[in-house]
Image (tube, rainbow, N blue to C red; front, side, top):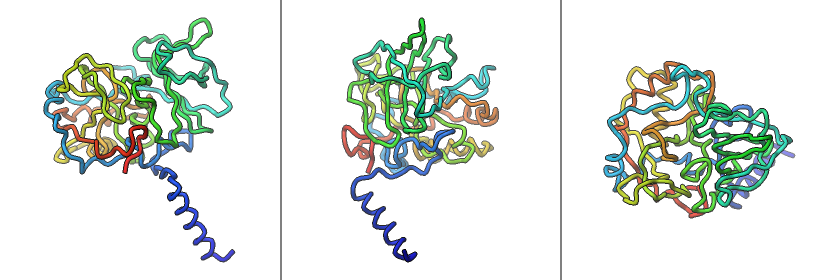
Length: 320
């Protein structure tokens, strides 16, 4: 076929795909060890929030969020635990054996078999206590499996709850369902990953926690686990943007890439925990300098933004 004809056919094919509603492909770094990108480019986690208005309740929420502290990177060589600090990501082949899991919150869990086994890395270790998240990516199907309170007892897998996502889809969980996070959201898209920071290409919002939240959630969050009825406290799914005026003076190149992401994509409140702790993957390559620099970002440099204009559908995380 003539070269021009081939080009024309490619354009027609691409246009047809977009017309049919095919989700745009994210150009971000894929999960290490896979060709899987974390959700389509139009997904909420990838939305540029620099132009969004400050939320009407921003000051109220922040007044209950310990804004006198600096941010805490909840990963890397901190507290002497080195590479064991952070949430590990396990990558498996599509042929990996799948096992049944017994859930505490079974009615809000995806009750399918999960690709768990002796190779599954659990946050903090298998006998650590704490959240004990397990994040598993099936690299063949680009499918994400997440659990918390993940344990093996007498050869049987148990967890608090379990959730499964297709990484190529914007579909949300049913409203009211939890996940491995209190917000009912996936954890993986909000984790800082070493390969993207190293490449200076962080193109998503970052998951973080605070200690006192309301019993409400904002799209695309599906669940909440707060202790306050008042709307003056932050809800799950609230999104916060680092002010453009914040200057990362003398920060390392990697830390500056994270700062840029916090200004463009922000932070998403995803779980209850220590105030202004934000999460990254467990990885032995995190530099001391980067972690130290990120500890110099003040919580007071953030505002809450109104993300209501990003919603296209109640059941989808796609954005305009």
